[in-house]
Image (tube, rainbow over all chains, first blue to last red):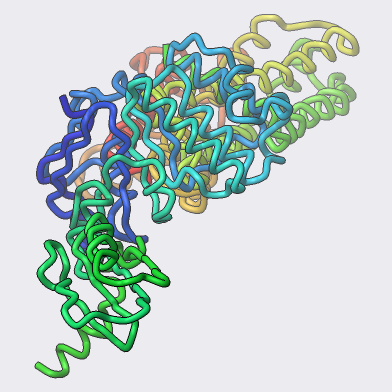
Length: 312
Length: 279
C-alpha cells in the first residue's frame, strides 16, 4: 500500500497562481523519498496539502490510507512532522514542548530519551526562546519522532544544523526507516538527498518532472558519466565507439575523453583500453547533482533557451 | 482529549506572558484605588449600604471600557499570532482539529481572564471587609457575575477575530475596530436610536420603545449596565423599561445576551478557520 498517494492534486491560489499543477505522486511504505526542487517549485504547498494545512483546489491526496480532506486529525497521530518556517513556543521549555506532543499524540515516549536522542538533553529545562537555530531544529526533529510515527515528513530538516548535526540526523533517519517508517524528505540540498534517499522526485513549476532513483536519473542524462584517460601511446584502432554504452570518444594526442551513458560503462572502457594500451592516468567524473537537477528543472538552460528563441 | 491538550499548553504559555499579567494588574490596581479613594464618599449617600453599592457600581463603570481591552489584548493573538510566527504548524501537525484549537484557545484565554477578574474582585472583597462598614453580598455577586460574563464575551470575540485572520496586524486592526464599534460608538449613537430612526422615518412605523430597548441592549456594554441595574437601583436616564415589558428587555435576560455573544463569534470564527489555508 502506498503511504502517500496523490491524483491530479492541484492548488491554485487566488489570482490564478498555480502552485501545484495536477500532481500524481506515490510514495511506498518504508521508503525514504527525497522531494527536490528549487524554491517556489511547489514543494511546500504539496507538503501543506499532504498535512491538511492547506486544502487542495482539485484532485485527491491520501496519506496512510486516509483522505486529507476528510476527518484527518486522527491520522496525524501516526505522522511526525518537522515543518519548515516554524517557530517554537518561546516561553515553554524543551521538555514542555515534548510533553505536549506526547500527550496530544497519546504516546508513551520518555521526553528525556528523545532529548537525549536529538542531543539537547542538557537544555531540557531551558525555555526555547533562547535556543539557537540548531537547537530549535533538534527539538523540532525530536517532536516529530514522538509516538514512533508511520510517516515522517521532514521539510528542509538540516537547515541550521552543523555538520555533526546533519550526520546525526541522517543516521537517525536511516535507523527509523529501517524500522519501517516511511520518510518524506523535502530539501533543496542535493547531496543530502542523495545520501539518504531511496528515490527522489523533482518538482519544477508545480509539476513533478522526474521520479526515480538518483542513479537512474543520472543515466537519463546526456554525458552523465565522463572519463579521461591518458595513455603512453594511442593505438590506431582503439574501437571504443563499438563498446556498448559509450556515447562519444575524442582523442587529443595521448588523451582520450569518453562520454558514457552510465557510470558502470566506465569500468568497461578502462578494461577495454587497458587490454590495448598502457594507461598512465585516469580522471573519472559523474555529472554533478547540480547538472542533474538543472537538466530536469531547466534552471541553467535559460541562456540557451533565449538563444534558441532569438535564432528562431 | 485534544481540546484540553491545546488549552493546557496554551495556558502554560500565556501564563508566562508578562504583557497579559501587566494589563490584569492594571485593572486590579484601578479597582483597589477606586474602592479605597471612594470610601470617603459613603457619607454623601442616604444610607451606608447605598454608598457601598454605588462604589461597587463604579468598579463596573471603570471595568466597562477597560476589561474589553484586557480581554482583547490577552486573546487577539491566540491563533493569528501562531499563524504568523509558524508555531501553528506544530499545532496543526498534531492530531488537533481546527475546532480543538478554537475551543482549547478559548478555554485557556478565558481562564486567564477569569483569574484576572476574580483577582480584582477578591481585592474589592478584601477592601469591603477591611475598610468598609458592610458587605452587600447579593449586589457584589451579581456585579461580579455580570462582569465575568462581559469579560468572557470579549475573549470569545477576540478568539473569533484571531481565528478569522492570518496575521497579527490584521487581528489588531479588526480588534480595534470592533472595540470602537461596540464600546465607543454606542456612547454617541445607541443602536436603539438607529433602529428607531430606521423604524419610524424609513419604514414609517409607529414608535415601539421595547424594540429600541432590545436593540440597545444587544451591545455588550449596555447589557452589562442593564444586567446589574436591579442591584444598583441606577438606571440610565431615559432607559427605564416598564415592569410588564417582555422578558427579553428585562435585566434577567442579559446573561443570555452574553451567551449569544460568546457562541456566535466562536461559531463564525470556527467556520472561517476551518477552511483557512495555514501556510
